[in-house]
Image 1 (cartoon, rainbow, N blue to C red):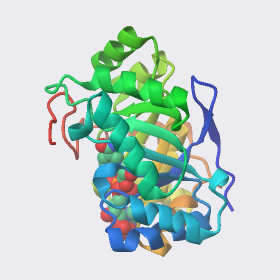
Image 2 (cartoon, protein in one colour):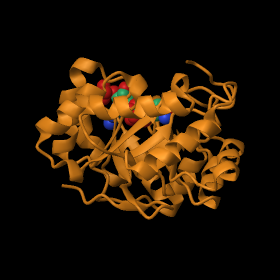
Image 3 (cartoon, helix red, strand yellow):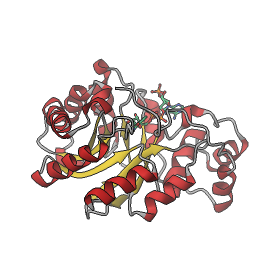
Length: 276
Ligand SMILES: NC(=O)c1ccc[n+]([C@@H]2O[C@H](COP(=O)([O-])OP(=O)(O)OC[C@H]3O[C@@H](n4cnc5c(N)ncnc54)[C@H](OP(=O)(O)O)[C@@H]3O)[C@@H](O)[C@H]2O)c1
């Protein structure tokens, strides 16, 4: 099995740099997908209350036979669950639905700035972490101004900020903003829906290394220093996506891939997104 590097958070805890995400994985196939990924050696599962498949996450965790302590489990609190009491209820519900007594990491899914409840939600996260409901706390889709607001209000810096990063949306400023604050960047939709798979920087690196464009993109993410979560319900592609620890991209290949950045999101803009 792949030897997957660990990243160290600003709170002293560690997290595997690579893992498996379950957005859009239907509830009735989630258990199988999670079990398959864990058996292949994925050490981290990235879920969320809003994905509607946390029961499958828990079932896959149990049927995989992989010890709970060997798996890093993340979930997220959705926009409609912001605020002290709702955030707590959301975390307690996730623990119950997954069937575990402690989460490794919980994230505020989006800042939803129109609601203006993310500071209060962060305060609730700190209390819950201190009580032991989760080991580490972080955020997702936070811009620099959102980060600074919660840090100034509480003095607690998020361990991680999960943001969209792929070859067409490389987010150099946001990755630097995270790094300056001691926050791990974790990339969501790392493959960018395959928008660049036919582009020369990826096809050339794939030819030289004997890997697929998807593997080259995931490897590029790791070499940027990002934590990465990848998703596939297909066992062959699950195996392909974790087979990225036996090759390296050259500096020239990294530079060529950097030219693919066009600043184009596949998902919403965090400064305005407010779906409940
Ligand atoms: N915080 C947030 O707001 C946020 C937003 C989006 C996602 N996320 C998290 O990030 C995770 C990853 O993002 P994502 O789900 O968009 O994943 P992704 O890994 O970028 O893309 C998954 C898609 O690519 C296909 N695929 C996977 N491996 C492939 C390969 N080797 N070659 C060709 N196609 C391949 C999959 O199809 P098959 O399944 O058919 O293989 C699926 O349609 C999510 O699952 C979720 O946990 C978080």
